[in-house]
Amino acid sequence: MDDRYAKKWQALVGISLLSFIVFMDYGIVNTILPGIQADLLASVSQLQWVMNVFFMGLAMFMVTMGRLGDIYGRRRVLYIGTVAFGIASAVCGAAPTPEILIAARAVQGMAGAISLTCAASLVTHAFPHEEEGRAMGFFMSITAIGMAVGPVIGGFFLSFLSWRWAFYVNVPVIIIGFLVCRGAVPETPRLTEEKVDWWGLLFLVPGIGVMVLAIMQGNAWGWGSDVMIALYAATAFCLVAFIVTEQRVASPIVDFKLLRNPMFQSAVFVAFGLGGFIGIGTFLPALFLINIQGMPAYVAGLMLMPITLLVMIIPPAIGKLVDARGPVGFMILGLAILVIAAVVQIFFVPASPVWYVLLGLALFGLGWGFQQATSAVAATSALPPESAGLALGTLWTLWNIASSITLAVGGLILRVVDQSRLDASLAANNITLSDQEQHVIRSLLSDPSRAEQTLGELPAKLSTEIAPLFHDSFSAGYSNAMLFMAIWCGVCLIGVTVTGLRARADRSQTEPPGGSV
Image (cartoon, rainbow, N blue to C red; front, side):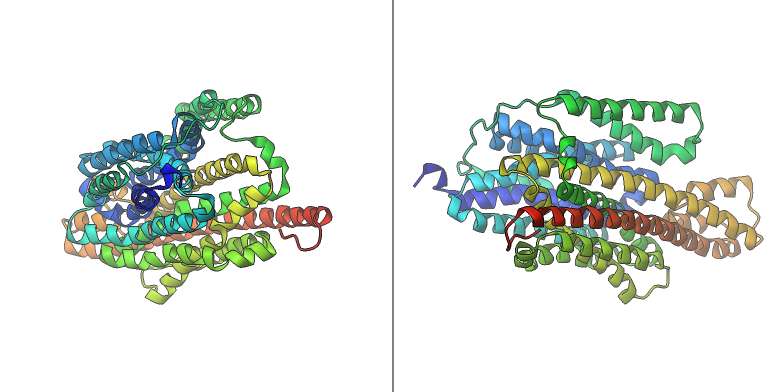
């Protein structure tokens, strides 16, 4: 037996633990946002950044980190990234201000990109070929459990300890993971002569960052202001330069040549549709459940758990059907379910019954489950085996870019509708406020939990009249954000249907009977 297989199961457990915390962190933050909001006096815009910079870090550095692992050794890169993730987690937990928390979350996203690219390949390297499938099944199960329990653990910490422990908990898990990995994980040799696309990274990072900043702050700064015009110009320059650069470098972050393939196009539509829904669908529901419906955080975590449980259950359940029939039909079905999920959530109101809220959340998880693995199958089946890694890296990059964009747009819609609805409600109820009271209310828009606490200092009659208006205005913003999501996913559904069916027709003309698409 090859020496590198001697401690394969120990290596598998250790690598799985190091990846577990990244996947758990993906969901754990959702249910602690109200605690962050109250403790750090964070605005909803700042809460968006807490979520968004993590997605942006994943999007912008995934391909680069994977290539660094191929060049310098995946074990080395994974270990460095995990240490960085642990340090960033400790800083998140101790953050005294929203700004420091946001900066540390950005580092978490960049470090998390390493785990998503290097860990799985290290698992297959630690096992003989005939056992790779079994090992990957175990690895994926552990990471899926991390996603499933994340919201519940976050809710537990917020309810009984502090939101800060949702970040501190990563540190001991990382230490245990390193202890298990010690002496068991074999290093990979240099696997490629390709170079890191530093020029592409130089344009992608500011391009996406400035674009998201413009979307999120445009309403506050004025869409036609000088600073916004400068942001538009910077976004256009960086993204155009990125596209031009990617056409010329030998090892691009995003290989736009892949987009010529109809099957890969269909996978990209899924990445934009599902990735977009994940951006909004993992941010707003926790705020709604805790702030609007008044649920304890741990109960809200349990309410969110069906999403990730279905993501864990559905892919293996449909695996044989995907092999037999191809991924296209399942991708179309998944996006159609997401459209229905968005429509159901449009009608979330403070008095919505638990069963109806669970229906909207479960439909999100169901649609996600039908697309999670099938989009990867579509992306890789469209290309030669040697291009599979590049295809997946490109797909996940576009996936997380979509999450960042829709989270920014959805948050903008929430704030604009929230403010206009509140102004209309105050006028309709003939409520006149002093300048100081108006300042308080506008500073607390889209923050019902802190609004009620602050309004409690006002005369009882005024507080009683105004407090319910915050719930109604937030619900209106939520509904309009989900309307945007329904339209977004509907457009992507049309795209995946057209390109997927075209790919199926093209493949049927070139493959012998029995092939599947």
